[in-house]
Length: 562
Image (cartoon, rainbow, N blue to C red):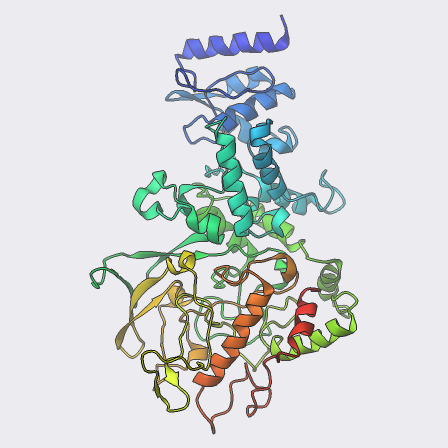
């Protein structure tokens, strides 16, 4: 009798003795299992359910030398499954092959190869020594944790950090990759109905608030590359029913945001030397698009709770390892060397590669037109005493429309075909669908209504001035309404699309938007003798920061070199 035959006989005897039914229903199409091919109802993560990926991994473990007797001796019968979560959670590092710790084993056939290639490509590669020597212990543990789709003992939904921060996508998530994974998953399910992709969990479906665990509309994820971020509404913000016009009793709201890259994360968090904001949290910046997390550990824990839906808090060491791994991710050797020099207190070399004459010119344009916000080592910190920490750059939907005729100072009349002072690109329907109407209590007690797809930091603070006035009102640059943190721009050529809602498909679209933003700021700022805003003026008199049409090619050349 072969070893596999003996294992199969013994396992089936155990199942029969315990009275457990097999996991597949009568007539269900079964996928081939590796090794001994035991279709046991095993539960490896302790959630009371036996899934095909768990059965596959269990058989792969057996095929690679795992001891069935040891596993069964530690099994618990929970309902109709064999709970092996304690046993597998207690295995020492290296006992379970890393391919197992990082998620379901692949379904290797033509229908599923494209999907499996995408899943494997999402995983972060080994940046140090895989055996955890030479000072790389924490980094390698962090990499494994970053890739781990099982998170044993934490009772997660099967998601890893790398499912959204895909290594193959510059550690971000583009709409193209989200759509490719979804299409490949559907093709795989034609033959394997139980094929899975942890990126597509109901919590990030558009219809989650209506259909809960049965939600299946992934339009925002596959078309826009956006994930659902739920917030508890502060007392000053209420949602308005767009049909009845009445204030609802909803206490939460969902906004849809992109997944930013974690390249250079060590350099893009809080800036102790930068200008502080007026209201917390994290007055000097942080992590996430609104800086709601102060450290990489907090960011990792927040993601595990909100997106991986863990039910058990991880050890602090696990979060420290994740942070250590992320702090080792850099977009270039030059940026890595700069970070090391900062750590050592050594002179900091310019991290930029060798530039052409045009790129050098573009770098000077960037310093004048962009660097006062995208400054510092990570190009994500505003200049001290020049501009503020958080900004509303008018990328939310809907975008401001110029309603004033500059020739008369009066509102445009119907049918006017003149040239507005600014003209932002309107949001496409795929993004405009995320607009909600808010009833807002301003700091002075006045109540008003505004539509937006994302109130920004107002969801954290409850503060929305919505226009200047006597205190406690503040001018727009100091308002939390639609304000977000400053992202880095290094490696920007590889991180399309852009902005918090992926609304700019190309760098040309980004520059188009900033041309209109500079016009908008110039048109809506207090008129002279009030000084010109520093975001558009170097001297408070002239609007000399915006790049010109002649400078744009050089600026683009530099951005493409970062």
